[in-house]
Length: 438
Image (tube, rainbow, N blue to C red):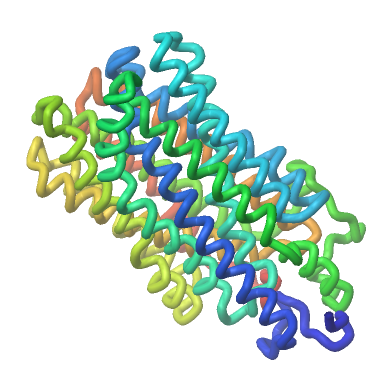
């Protein structure tokens, strides 16, 4: 492999990448693309039925807590996963995350069989490992990416989830019928299928993700300028160290804020929409209707992410973040005034997915290029932790808001949550601010 003396490292000002590194990057993208499809199936099956299963076991008012448990699990697992990545690379971190998600899926099935509610929440907590793996995979795509292609290559991995995720909610109904015939309780079987998908994704990465993209990027980092390495020259998996770096970099702060706020709004509105649909549809067809609506929503989240990545590279980070914010506000307006109109709810969730894509893809790209490679996994873990906690808060509160104030009020509160991000994105960047790619 070429040395740092002859290869412009990823994040340098030039886009003339060594052919050997370019081949590694292409292979990495292919592997991540394939496993994102598999992982997307596993994650989305659980998302599509999680609130319904929880509502059946513990009631509507606290059904959002089950979804929140999965979100919190994904957020908390970002800490050990990124520590593993900081110490040993992307591959072992992703594998551990997927296997943890598989264990969670199995526990949810046992919880449904036994009716033991604490086991349900523990299972949902660990099930978040699948989400943690899916989210960290997008960062793996930019470790060796050329500066002018970071947005597109990150968005490619986000987009890969579309193939599995759009089909998954509809597949959930078939999986549920199949496992119900085998004697499992209704709505539990899809989690068994999720566990199988997570194990398969982890196995593929364990065998084939070599060389590790993060470790390769570090080997190339010797030729970086001083602004591109941590002052002490240390590689730290500490969230405290990452926080110090992020606080001192306005672009990194904006990137994290965009990811977190977009996710908060998306989770809050999306998690209660199946319950809203259940109010006007009977048990016979509610899964089918929810599957269609969530498929459109997930298509909005992922299907156009390559376009978002191209816009990010072409027009800049802040304009695309603001565009995503506008779509989130439109989504809250449409869904919040839809009543029980399934068509309008579907449109609202499509806009919600598009807005999430704008903030997620662009914010993740901005964060990744704004921090040194030595502290990058920890900063990305910090971002996913904050994002997960924001989503968990929204998921937990949403059930109570819908129970006591209604679905329209939930959308109003979600729209108000976007206002601080608008102010931050409109604030002029300091004259001395730089990113890694600058």
